[in-house]
Every structure is written in structure tokens, then in C-alpha cells.
Image (tube, rainbow, N blue to C red; front, side, top):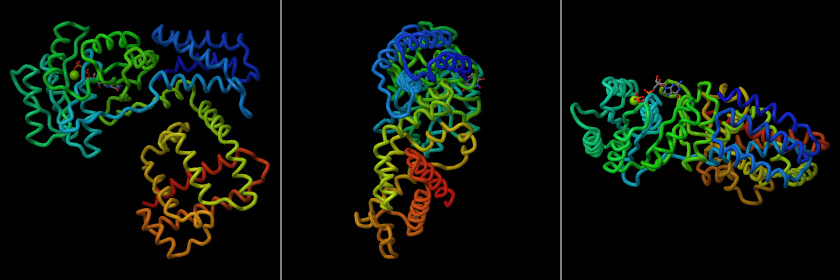
Length: 452
Ligand SMILES: Nc1nc2c(ncn2[C@@H]2O[C@H](COP(=O)(O)OP(=O)(O)OP(=O)(O)O)[C@@H](O)[C@H]2O)c(=O)[nH]1
Ligand SMILES: [Mg+2]
């Protein structure tokens, strides 16, 4: 996806990448090309103009820190703006305080509504919920069967009713859900070729009657800006709560993905990345931004910028290491720094090739919290002098942090390995330490997971 946009942006940014100085001229020249690339990708004109103005404005105040070149900072700036454009945070599904949570989908014909309903139901089921699928598309004869078949495939019930109107079906489905303890009700609706009044009225009535927590506009990413205009019409009528972008696995130019949030003011919540039932992902703006800019590049930049910010910290650490004073307290600080950079899943997802390789490896951020809990269960004295951690102290730490003695032993071993590794490093490489520590922590964590 986004190949063409990516290529064009890369070309545009080549001009400033290696520049040691950013002048108004070379920035303007590059931004003209960035603008053209965005418009070619079918990004909304207003959105593009705002984007360029933001970047221009921020680039003027760009201060060059440490060893970063201004051109590199500029690329990071564009990366951050792309993320901001698509939404800075991930939005979770809004749950009703009192079940069932009701989710309704709307959108044009063939956008992927029915498929999304089933994918969402499947992902919720995997999280231990008990979804009910509701077939409110009574106009296309095969629509109910399609949903039924999907339901069968994922072993979830599908509520349907012959000779009834969508409103009645939905109301009866809610009664059914309450009776049988289904905690998420997902209502599939009919699509039309274009927006028409009758259809709008029908979903608007449906919304009024069942009051969903979530009303998603399902949007085919391949349709570009047209999709954004359609979304606007739906939003005016339905007050959407979010957007689902489908077919992001296709050769979409990127227009919809980049414009829709900004135009609607509503978050993109999920993306469909294939026809299969498990090909639904929560929306990660950073991932898409990285992909658009050619990820490897950006990530090193972001990391570099990060290590710049923490350069002082790294110097302080280096001093400690040289004096052999590196402690669990510093380790804790380091972990916090890694955490600041995002979830481990996200971090790994950004490394080219890694995401695929690790798709089936369980990685959750809980392991991080466990290590944190263990260190926090140590006394200050123990954190500063890990050597005093004898058997009984280790047992206490395990008890205090809800872990096992083996966990604590493993952490201490890991910590000692890290100390050794750092000691063996020459002192001439500033900034390397933070990176090494991150790598070590990452490896340690994977090792931890593998033990389970
Ligand atoms: N490649 C790809 N195909 C998808 C994705 N989501 C849906 N599709 C395909 O798009 C086609 C239409 O999907 P449906 O879920 O039937 O769309 P719909 O919006 O329910 O269509 P109507 O009910 O006719 O309005 C199907 O062939 C799906 O397999 C996706 O994320 N990627
Ligand atoms: Mg359908």
C-alpha cells in the first residue's frame, strides 16, 4: 500500500535529507514536492494545505540538537505531522457501562461492512467476549446468508428474522442478547451504491431506536477522497463515532487514510488488511506514517532523536558505568525510557521484517510491568547494591511483586549480563550505551517470554 506516495515523498525528501543547513529555499522546494505527492495520493486539498503550513511553520523554529542533521529533523517533523494527521492515539472500542454494547456499521455497498462485522466479532470473541451478529441487511437476498456463513465459521450466533424490517430485527436482537447474555451486539446494515435519502433515514431510525455506543463508517480505502465526502454525509446524519478503513492491503493511494480523520474529526479505529477473518488490526497511525515515509529510515531517525533527548542521561549513566556504579535504579530509568517510546509490539512492528518473524511470538507489555514491579519491590539499598540480594531477599521481592523466585533470579542474571556487557564496552562511544541497553532489555524480554 501507499507505494506511489512513498516513492514521491522519498524523492521530495532526498533534497533535504543530507543538508547541513535548512534554508527557506530548500525547505520550500521540498515542501512543494511533498504537497504534490499528497495531492497525487488523493489527499483532501484543505488537509494538504494545513499539513504543509504546519510543517513549514515548525521547520522554521527547528533547532539542531546533537549530531542530527537539520534535514533529518525535518523528516522526523513530517513523520510526526503525519501521525498527528491520522490521530495521535489508538482508540479502543467504547463499551457500554451496562452490557450489551451495541455497535452499528454503515457505509456504501461493497465497502466491507459485513466482513468487518464478522472480523470484529471474532476479535472480541478471542478476548473472551460473547458477541451477537445481527443481520439487518434485508435488501440483498444473499446478505443474510453471507453473515450466517461467517458466523458459522467463527462459531458465533447470527440473529436474523424473515419478513421483518431492520428496526424490528434490531430490537428483537437486543431482547435476545439480554436474555442470552450476549455482551456485544454487532449490527450489519445494508449498503447502497450512492448515498440516498431512504437509506439514510433507515440507519438514522435504527440508530435512534437502538442507541449504539459505536457507529462506524466502513470506508473502502481504495476509493480515496470520494470516500471522505461520503463519510461526511453519513457523519452529518448519524454522528459517527469512528471510521473503519478496509482494503488497506490493496494498492490504495492513501488519500482516504490521510484525510478522513482530519475532515470528520472522528478517529479511525480499525483497518482491514485482507479478506480473511483475522485480518483486522487496531489502527496504528505511527505504523502507517512510518510505512509512508519508508520505515527503516524514519525509525532510526526517531531513535536518534530520542537518544539525543536522553543524551544527558546517557552521559550520566556512562559515568556510573565507568565507575562501576550502575544499579537497578538506573535500570528502572532505562525501562521507563523504552516505555516512553511506545509499546514493545509497536517498536518491533517498526523494524523491517521483524513484525512478520515475530507475528506468532507472544509479546505483551505485561512482562515489562513485571520487571518494574520486581525492582520496585526492592529496597533502595538493594537497588543500589544488587549484590546483597540473597535467597531470602529474593523470596521477599518475588512475594512483593507477585512473581516467582525464578523470575527474580532471571532478572538479576539479566542485569548482571548487562553490567558485564557495558563494562566491556569502550568508553568512547557516547549514545551507544542507551541503545545497547535497549537491545539488551528487548532480548531479555523475549527470552523471558520464551520461558513460559
Ligand atoms: N482485500 C480485502 N478485501 C476485503 C476487505 N474487507 C472486505 N473485503 C472484501 O470486499 C468485498 C465486499 O465485502 P462485504 O463485507 O461483503 O461488503 P459490504 O459492505 O457488506 O457489502 P454490501 O453488503 O453489499 O453493501 C468482499 O469480497 C470482501 O471479501 C479487506 O480488508 N481487504
Ligand atoms: Mg454486507
